[in-house]
Length: 183
Image (tube, rainbow, N blue to C red; front, side, top):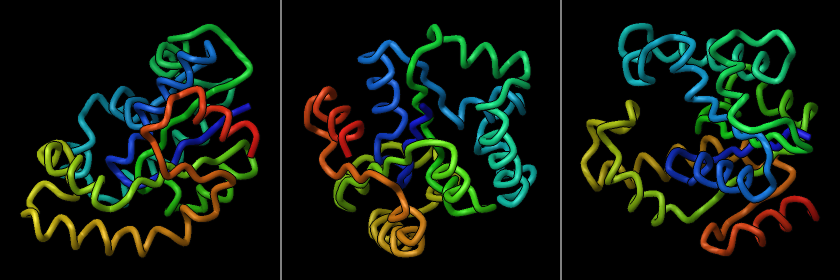
C-alpha cells in the first residue's frame, strides 16, 4: 500500500514519512529528493533556472513513475533504502496535490494523508528554513504569515480531498500510524 503524505511546506511530511517507515520497517520515498537526484540540482535551482511550471510537470511525472517498475537507476537507489514491505510512505512536496490532477491520481493509487499543523506552527518552522524554500526565501516575518495563510486557503481544496487528516504531529509516531491505518 502506498501512503502519500501531503500538506504545506514545513508541515513535517518528510520527517513523519521517514519515522513511519522506520516504525513499520517500510519503504520511505521523499519526492523532492527523487527530483533533486533526477535533475542533479536543488529544488531552488530548478525553480530559478526553469520556472515553476517546468518543476510542476517534472514533479507530476516523477510522482507517477516512482511507484512503477520502470524506475531509473537513481530512483531505484532511493527506493532501495529499505527492503520491500507492506507499506511505502511517500512524502510529497507542498504543491504536489495542486497540479496536473495529482490529488485524484494519488487517491486512486493509495491512501492520502494530509499533515495539517496550525499556521502558527508553520510560520515558526518556516521562519528557520526560508533560505532553502524558493517560494518564501524573500519574505519577511509578516509577509511569511500572510503568504502561508493565503496559500493554505488556495490549497485547502486539494488537501481536504485526503482520506486522512493529521493535525497533531506531536503525538507519538505509533499513534499517528494507528490514526492512518484505522481511518
